[in-house]
Length: 253
View 1 (spheres, rainbow, N blue to C red):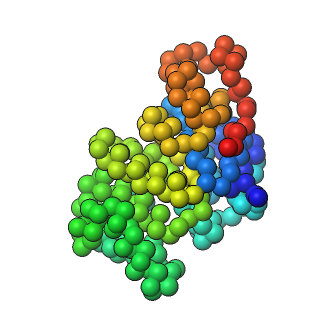
View 2: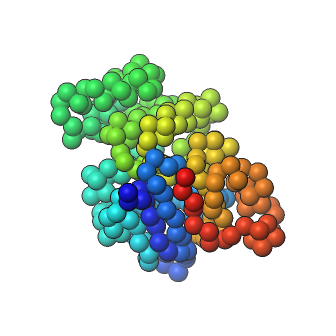
View 3: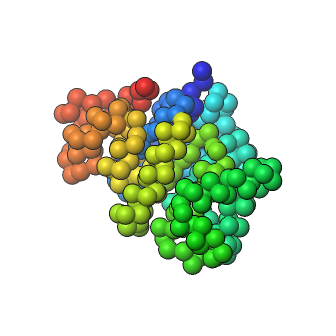
C-alpha cells in the first residue's frame, strides 16, 4: 500500500527568506498528523506547499504514490485533496447553500442533494442559515461552512491550517468534533494548529517545527507533555538535552 503522503526534503523560500527547510515526513492512509510550532515556524508555508498553493523550492511531494510537486492546486483538488487555509475558504457573497452546491458541483444530481443534506446533518446550524449569505455568518459558522464544504466532497487527504483561529472554545469543540468523526471514518488529515491540546487529542503523530525546520517528530502522546513544553515553550532550542531526534521521520501506526 502506498503512503497517503510522503514529503522528502521539502523546502520553500520567499526571496532570500527560508520558510520551510528540508522537511521530510510519511503518513499512512487514515492517519492524522498534527504539525505544531510557534508563529513563524513555517507551518502554514508547509501546508500551502502540500496543497500546491505555493511552489516548493526543492524536494518532492508524493500523494498515493504519485509525484505531485509540479501539479497545479486545481489539479490536486480534482484528485481528492482538500485544503482549508487560515483564511476561511468560503464565498462570502453567496448563500450558505450556494457555497455547498459549488463544493459538490462535480457530483451527480442525486449525490449532490445527499451531500448537502450530509453537510446540514454535520452542522445543523447551517441548515438554519441556508438562505443567508456566508458573509453574515459568525466566524464560527463560517468555519463550519468551510469544513463542511471540504468534507462533503469525500477527499482522500485534508490539509487544515489553523481551524480554531479566532473561535470561541465551544465552537472549537464543535469543529473538532466533526473533524474527529472524519478521522475515525478513515480520512487522512494534516492538521496545522496552535491549539496544541485539541490537535494532539485527535492526532496519531505530531511534527514540531521551529524556524522552518522539523525539530521533533513522533507519536502524539509523546508530544503532549515534555516535548511540547520544550519546543513550544520558552526553553532552549538544544535538542540533545532532551534526547529527541531533530530529523526523525514521523513513525506510522
